[in-house]
Amino acid sequence: MAPKKAKNPVRSIERATEILELLKELDGARLVDLEGYVDLSKGTIHSYLATLEQCGLVSKDGSTYNIGLNSLTLGGYARDRQPLYVLGREGADELAEQTGELVALMTEWNGRSTYLYQRAGERAMAMDSHLGVQLPIHCTASGKAILSELPEERVHEIIDERGLPVWTDNTITDRAALFEELETIRERGISFDDEERIDGLRGIGVPITRDDDLLGAIALAGPVNRLEGDRYREELPDQLTKIRRMIDVKAKYPQL
Amino acid sequence: MAPKKAKNPVRSIERATEILELLKELDGARLVDLEGYVDLSKGTIHSYLATLEQCGLVSKDGSTYNIGLNSLTLGGYARDRQPLYVLGREGADELAEQTGELVALMTEWNGRSTYLYQRAGERAMAMDSHLGVQLPIHCTASGKAILSELPEERVHEIIDERGLPVWTDNTITDRAALFEELETIRERGISFDDEERIDGLRGIGVPITRDDDLLGAIALAGPVNRLEGDRYREELPDQLTKIRRMIDVKAKYPQL
DNA sequence: GGCCGACATTCGACAATACCAAACATTTAG
DNA sequence: CTAAATGTTTGGTATTGTCGAATGTCGGCC
Image: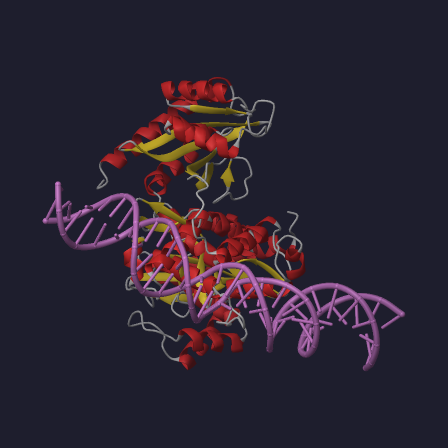
């Protein structure tokens, strides 16, 4: 979705979400800490925090505030309705088992590639949980898989909004080069992230669609020393493609 | 936390969260659908929805609104900071593997027992994902494990707020009986749910603490025909206790 | 294709309420 | 124990959320 501005926005909601984002960014904060970041008086911030706490969106521990678990209740619900999650979880588990690597279900949100689910195989990198985290779309395997299935104009929109910021030496920062790459991805149905976001980290992705609706992508990630040669270029891509086909079938015959 | 009312609440935030809850309850809704549930004019509801969408908390598909994925971003973050999740995930995975059943990490929120994580073993019941779902605390193994470690007055508070509603014939609905049961749980360190919430479903739980701080509980669930006899009363409880000890150690020596 | 009904969106005037500053209370540090 | 720092409450004021009506849009039906 584009950064569509509401015509008659409810300012209090804008401010409340700003505070929530801040609490996340700062990893918890006291009232005074927030004062510097948000253009509201101490008293007003207090009202906001107290109200958000009452609503379960914020939790107060001593005098520091943080995000409350009602957000998880809402978020968990939102994830459950994502068709990619419903259709793809099983396949993701299977793929993690087969390959031993880290597998994730990602969907486009806000012009970013967003984690719906992640499963670590036996040999997978130590991972912190990434649920809900939003990654840049131009330098991840999942993101490029998604872009490859989006209408061209939407891709331009996203780039206009987010740009093509550099993450590593390998990051694609040129719009034309990116479109070329997307064409290549479409041909084979596989996207690669060759240390484009993080040095030493590679990834492989496939887009998932249903009735021409783009649902998102499945992606696999691992360190360069394990994702290399034929395994990186052939074997794993083939396994991903198989899982993709399995999901396609599942999407077509939901009763199974 | 008790239903603490903010002294000077920001009404717009209260109303916005009310709308979010409604969207979840109704599993998505159009503007007119909401009109019947919320005491605001059509125009105002529209402003709310448009603002929430702009903030990523709501997504609009055609003319129906639903919860947006920014809630998952916030919720995922909130989960990651829960010590029970950080300390217990590995143990939960292990337990699911060992037993083949459904294992969950639950924490108290809002006087309810709330899912932070769930892992299904090989033979586990088909499960829909339950992330963030809030269960009643008096008729679940996890809930009673949690209650057993809470100060008595807090338990009274929760019961005062939530009551002891009937779920099945086995649900404990008497305050004194519940307190007796909690005493029993404290003695052995294990709680049982013997079809107290859902007919045919049993559960076993252990509380998890760190430095006398209650973090939540680990719980295992399965159908009566697999959770019975010694396995239900001895073997599985012992396995849970082992995992609990493992987590205790991990809590004590965080560097490991 | 065009009409109709249902619904979504915008707008301006009014009134509710979010805001600030300052007073008050509480906690923390020294 | 005192002072400083932070958290909480209050009342008056201006912002802004609210309503109702008008306008715009969509989809179905004849």
